[in-house]
Length: 196
Image (cartoon, rainbow, N blue to C red; front, top):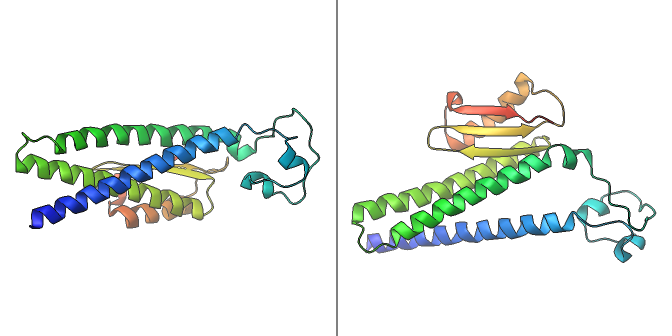
């Protein structure tokens, strides 16, 4: 009975991870589709827009038909790397999760292997949650962008500083976040400033 409950919990976690992966993927696709908007569209001419990046300006600027929207320095400098790194990380996780799910559903596998597979799926889910937490907490500290990569024995955090150098205080802040979230020792954490 306990095995059934545990398997049900693992299956639910895998389902939630897959749903989160899909939603993240679809949100990323929607975000890149919205990036191609141009000034002069009817919604922008009237000064109203559903785009949160455009609505954050203090006053609407006159629209010029056919002119592309100017990219902010944060978008043009580091977001390309961070977007592609997130996409690559997600694709690698998706393929690993698919392989593990296929292995877990194999009827010929013994119970010990099924348990190891379930533990690997749980580890992927834990890594995904921890990475998201680290990224959110680091950006909440005022850094332009951040991406975390967690493996079994190390954590790498790439931080966009907006062109500034990472000081010892910056490294200490980020290190505290990572060690608190993952339980890893400071020697297992690598903090990399992004080249802007």
